[in-house]
Image (cartoon, rainbow, N blue to C red; front, side, top):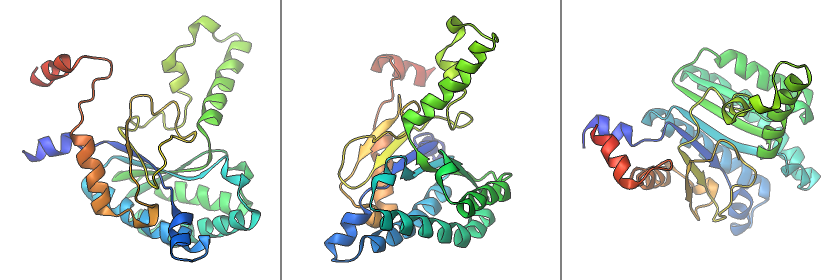
Length: 249
C-alpha cells in the first residue's frame, strides 16, 4: 500500500467518549480522582499520536451536560483538574501548532475556568497542525436546540420563511460547522451508546466500541481502531458497487 493510500484510509476527524476512569481506579482500589488524573495522561498520549499520524481534528467529550448529576465533590475535583491541566498543557499544545477549541455551554463553569478556556483559544487560534476540540458542558440536544433557536429568531425577524430551513442551514449553526464531520467515533469502557454526544454530526460516522478503560487506552489501542476504520466501506447511502466504481473513476 502506498503512503497516499494509507493516508486516504485515515479518518480526518476522530471523536472520542473517554469512558472508564472511575472503573479503572476502582479496579485498583484507588479513589475515582486518581482515575481522572490518569485519564489526563491518556489524553496527552492520544493527542500526540493523532497529531503525528496526520489526523486533522480530534474532539474529546470531557464533561457532558449530564455530568453535573455526579457527586458534588467529584465535580469540584474535575473542575480543579480541568483548570490545572489547561494551565500546564496549553504551552505544549501551542508549541506543537495545535489549535484548541471548546464547545458547550461554558456559562455554568467558574469564571476562572472560562477565562482560561478563552485564553487557550486565543493563544492557539492561528495554529494549523490539528484542531483539538474539547466538549465541556456539552450535549447534542443542547447543540441542536441552540441552532434551531438561532434560526427561529431569523424566521421571527422575517429574514427567512419556515420552508427555507434546510439541513444545511441547521448544520451551519451546529458546533464544529467549519470542520469535517467525524469519520470515526470511539467509545472506551465497554458501553455501546452515544450518550448525547454530537448527535447531528455523527449521522454517517463509523462507530467503534472497545472494552479498554480510558486510562489504559494508548497508541496501540488507537491503531486497532484505525485499522477497523480502514477496513470498512463507507457508502453514504450508495451500494457497495457504486462506491467501488467511484474509487476507480
